[in-house]
Length: 285
Image (spheres, rainbow, N blue to C red):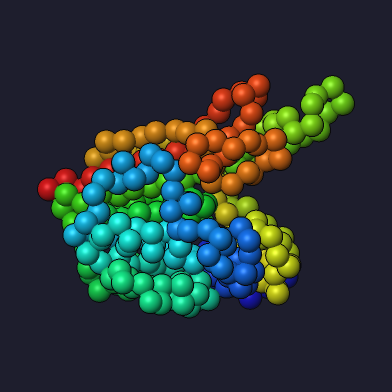
């Protein structure tokens, strides 16, 4: 625990995040947002372009970093992968993911470990595909270190596929003004990193459901799109896809309207801005 009046250390911040996600997990597992009662499937969380970018997964070994409940992990496994592994630092999330995967015919495994310890936790195994994103990178203090870990986890010729919320999305917020329509968005938070970690103390998570049972503090780091690209390229991975999209898998803002594939976008009369991005990079042979 941090002493009053003293800034927490990096290990203390990462431990706080682990406790926070342990507290979120039972709320998420019971939520309508995730629909683990069968009202939603893992494929609901994939944008239409993701499957074409990923290509044929049959016979491939796939790793999903920061997998949380494993909904997307299972969807990847069901595409015919030879073996799929989900890894997450939250013990509660991994426990729930294993329950969710029980009975599936796919070859599926879940590992409890921090992403920074993934190489050792996976026994030096290498994968054909490393998949990650959708709210993962903001919990990483050092993207260069993360990218080097991804490089070590990939087979030569293996592929990183990252689908993440765009830094611009994290910068936008509704700011009511007397002369503006309700829901108009303005830049209200940093796009670029550099100010250090953000301390967030929120008793509620992003899904429906009750408040968290303790452990309400978490820490996030901002990373611009350039930071992500530089980290991946600097680790020796070769980028071959970088796309931006105005789609989101849920209506983050009240004004959003349904788009293709069951996803959401801002209405036509509002500016067309990127809300997510996707990056594909290959470890050279």
